[in-house]
Amino acid sequence: MPDLSKNIFATVLDRVREACAGLVPAGSDLSRVVVEPPRDAAHGDMATNAAMVLAKEAGRKPRELAEAIAAKLAADPLITKVDIAGPGFINLSLKVGGWHEELRAAIAAGEHYGASGIGKAEKVNVEYVSANPTGPLHVGHGRGAVFGDALCNLLAFAGYAVTREYYVNDAGAQVDVLARSAFLRYREALGDAIGEIPDGLYPGDYLKECGEELAKDYDQELKQMPESEWLPIVRTRAIDMMLAEIRNDLMGLNVVPEVFFSERSLIEGEFDPFAPQKADDKPKDQVAETIKALRQQGHIYEGRLPPPKGAPVEDWEDREQTLFRATEFGDDIDRPLMKSDGSYTYFASDIAYHKSKVDRGFLNLIDVWGADHGGYVKRMQAAVAAVSGGKATLDVKIVQLVKLLRGGEPVKMSKRAGDYIMMRDVVKEVGRDAVRFMMLYRKNDAPLDFDLEKVIEQSRDNPVFYVQYGHARAESVFRNARETVPALPLNSAERRAFLGKAPIDALDDAGELSLIRRIAQYPRLVEAAALAHEPHRVAFYLYELASEFHAQWTRGNDLPHLRFIIQNNPELTVARLALVQGVAGVLASGLALLGVTAPEEMR
Image (cartoon, rainbow, N blue to C red):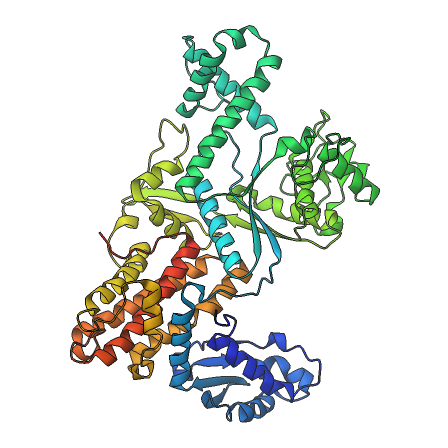
């Protein structure tokens, strides 16, 4: 396999840093030096900030240092032109042959092009979806699921060791409400008239099946029991059935968490499923153990919180209580861990849960949360700092709301769901690919309007169609080229090997070279998106690449000598097929990161 770390941007960055090394004191931090495409293509192929960030250490003015760096770079065989702009930015133009070789490298790497080792196999825990097991997934959950899954794909592609995790909120008041709602449906299945669903219970028809199963298994037995006896039975059954529905909904999106971690297991002291067990081990209340450990470290105390100033603090009670010193770790207020009835706050369980992650060896944590959890971020980051002794980091990605439309009009709720729109209904109507791509075609922290009609339009205004059509169009070029190039293999791996030997130096049209430059940006884009935890960058890039490819196709329609297939010139055709291969490979790779298929034909 080729050295995937040495794409053309990484190569030029190495050479810029080498040029700087003799001009600044030994031990200077060269990691701040970057090489990137210039904002204006007229300024060259790449730009570097080297002189701007190193001038102070070099004891020289930025422009003076830039001139010294430029003098060294001008002698580099890959670089044809060096310009200094403004106070000291350096613009570089590369030899065309450098871009040709990058295209050849992209073809050789195939599906591995853009992969990197920046993660250095570091363990990363990504917790996403984590919807309460009280009903099927709605479209908001779906956006979080798609975002989390694509982020995991991206991190794995960048060399991290990723664990995909779902935290099951199977403790607390909401699952007791679920049990009471299911019990009402159980009574209904037995023939009782239940009337309107009372306020405070879940009204969706999805619990009817649970009620019917309970009636089948228990007949009248549960009705003869007091609530204290039937509630845990019904709760367990309802949670199991809801989790099965949720798993099916996730499968419909091709989202498969590796770990389902139970909140109840923390509170009720079940064995830690990740820890080796000894014969004399006894289950422990992990929340109590966590509070005990934090108290011994001085992070917990008994005290009163002052009345809230300005906006209300939802956890505030005017009483002596057990408090976590969250303010010592950057939060705005210390946080309660015990309710007045002696039960744990949600925050207490969440601290124990994140301690479990740290205990499992994860120091790089990412949580994907819904739009209503923004106020919870500081306290959770404070908790992670406390339980890890400052060694772990927590990045919380907030996923904003989805507004579902049809032709610009809001979509009505389904009776089965009760008061929300089920994700499975959306997937069934428009398909998984449209859902996944469009959920990622906007930054996670921005609200999303999802129009069921627009996402299936076959036009440039529909990004998922336009990108997939780009890949299908590339495949159609290969099918049509076999008359001109009979030796072109049908098998994709063999085709790559064949086109890797193409006379790529024949590609000299401005549009062709622009496409190669766009392809070459992919490895750098992937690394930046992985480091920022922003998979939407991949979706944006794919649309730009597909748009440029379609534009080159259109130029060939207007100017026949620019067509990808030149019937009387098989050598030039092979060179242009290599360019099409580069486009197709990157489109397929990027779509795979997003969890979207790369079709060979559009129907």
